[in-house]
Length: 109
Image (cartoon, one colour):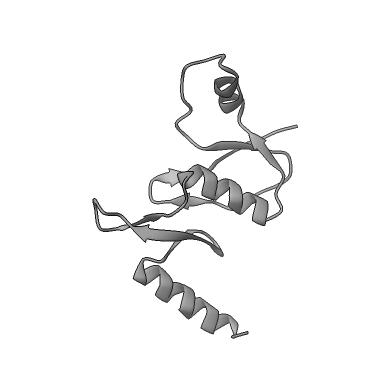
């Protein structure tokens, strides 16, 4: 394995090439070039929501979907939750974001 600086340079190069997108400190997601804008976008089928949930799982953070999403999935409301929100019971201080999208974290009991 390479050293810390060498790995960092390789990651920055992949971000510059549009093959990866940085979504947080030490967190990267696969990217592909958009046919519409020509800019890198997430390659995940689930978009930012799926990528941020996978990042939480990789970090070993126990989470559950927000109350709004649960109510929407049960059919109790027709309002689609716009922001990606999760409930976390443990302490979690990292930010997961990409451009204007940011994972909202609520504290659970």
